[in-house]
Length: 437
Ligand SMILES: Cc1cc2nc3c(=O)[nH]c(=O)nc-3n(C[C@H](O)[C@H](O)[C@H](O)COP(=O)(O)OP(=O)(O)OC[C@H]3O[C@@H](n4cnc5c(N)ncnc54)[C@H](O)[C@@H]3O)c2cc1C
Image 1: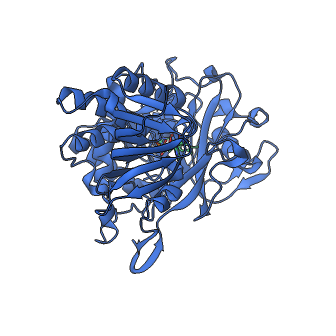
Image 2 (image 1 turned 120 degrees about the vertical axis):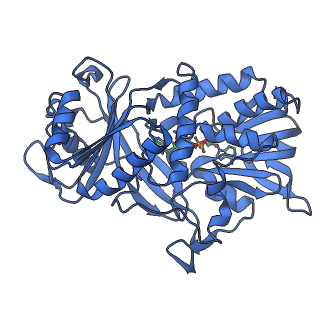
Image 3 (image 1 turned 60 degrees about the horizontal axis):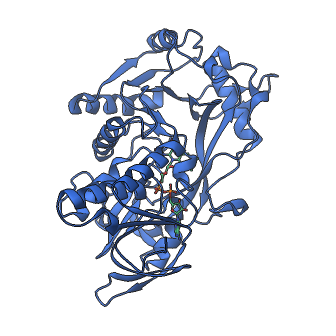
């Protein structure tokens, strides 16, 4: 099928946000008598799930310190749970087990969970934490952990499969998907709206545009001629770069995944641990003596997870190795720390360093100046979904964008408007030492 020369709704990017928008928009246009499914056109330069959505660990959680994030995440959870087969969603729950500096923040998150009717259990005190964790994993052995927040919803999805599920749902609502065209520029009308989207396969006249390009947001932002600097959220008299990059460090140990199982034989919740206990390798070498944060899950053929991201700065190669995907290859040091931390937590992972995978893993994320998403009209007919790397779990954002494009308001997305930087209303930060909350 030839790339159309006109699209009433052109969505750039076939990741979680582009395809969730496409699916819901095609559905709502028909249901509201405002258009046809075919009016929604998705283009992607590389493929369905070719970007961050396809390399993500797939964590789905709701332990955010900021109320707008919590509310939005509960909405997203409803969408994940609405079709677990198509979304390849494992509703196994999410355990956050942390050291003392995280206690205050996690207690606040738990209190909000209670208020909003989101089921979670909060345990405090080192002895009780160990007992609770050993009730789930008999060989739990981590020391000096002060709190557990156990979300009974949440878990993880198989990332590539989930995005293909969204693509099938979008196509079943008659949205059109085109793989191959790269957006190279925009032509603007006098009122600042985009009239034409230029691609390497020809121009497309547009009614509305949704930009959902994940870590490629900075070059796209520049093509849209938008401000590259904003007032510093910590010091509004100073300007800072709006976008910077972090390397998301993830990897896997290629062991029988069924080693990782709960005491009652079930698929385990996703486990996240923050601590400052020094970590040692299997031969007794000190590998890390600063605070660390990690997460892990049972994958299809391995145990997979990650550690605290590394700041790369305002410039990064997002398409390394010519792959047209945002891979970032983790180092031996990542595996030394990550596997040592797994063994520190659970006896079953002792002696598994030699099974560290050699496949490319991890990826690049584009983060905003306050580390929170920007969901907003950045030109009169251009809605930008830039999730500041929070977003595989945010499957419900596209649903809200579809509502906006069909004439509704979204209270859930309103706090993420771009104007917050100028209005000095950046999101409050928790006192935790990690960027998780
Ligand atoms: C290693 C890693 C692990 C992560 N783990 C998690 C996790 O466990 N949970 C979580 O919630 N989030 C996680 N994230 C973050 C999450 O993956 C992203 O925030 C989210 O997937 C972004 O989705 P998206 O749809 O905006 O972009 P993407 O999925 O990156 O899709 C963007 C698409 O746009 C296309 N594109 C880009 N530029 C152009 C152009 N010029 N023309 C045409 N097409 C273009 C790309 O080919 C790509 O397919 C992780 C990220 C990484 C890198």
